[in-house]
Image (cartoon, rainbow over all chains, first blue to last red; front, side, top):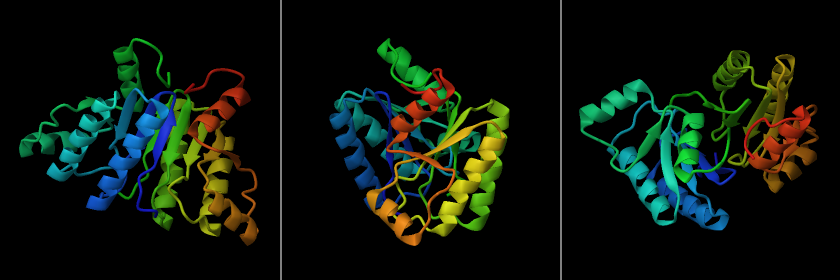
Length: 125
Length: 125
């Protein structure tokens, strides 16, 4: 693999699908890539799919919160989608609340959420 | 990681982002998951993003062709998007032509292609 998480574009939403356990450098690269793409495309929303993740620990939780914070400064709202029930349970047990991170059941719900947030059609259906 | 590649849904298109070198079992799981999702959702299109792949060898090429063939039987067209220039060069040098596999530059072009193919709005914009 390339060691970089691809950032896909759908309308004015950027989509990131996290599928592997990210190491520090990959997280930094992802934050860089995503920030640049938000600025370059003028994206209004970011969807991060974590349906492949069986574990979300404090490291991943911090990454999601940081990405959401960076994106917000750049004018894009972040929605985390695809969280497994077991992951949600673990998060609560660990006392991780994903402050400032919006969530939705799946990609379509996440896109719908962003669409409503911006009061216009952003992407998807 | 979970060892499974997530299948995301956008409208009546399913999206698969390949980010890791897939082992045999992962390919079988992906074919299973994707087939089931096509049937369950009535999806008309499949987009496979390979922008994270630095190498597409005959194994990956066969997988893409097989997925496209299976999807077609189930009524969904497949478009492979995000191929890097170096990958295209290598494919040609290896004599791999990705028979029966449509390609597009990126996710949006791929969604647009599927939309035109079905003569109606399928997903994205």
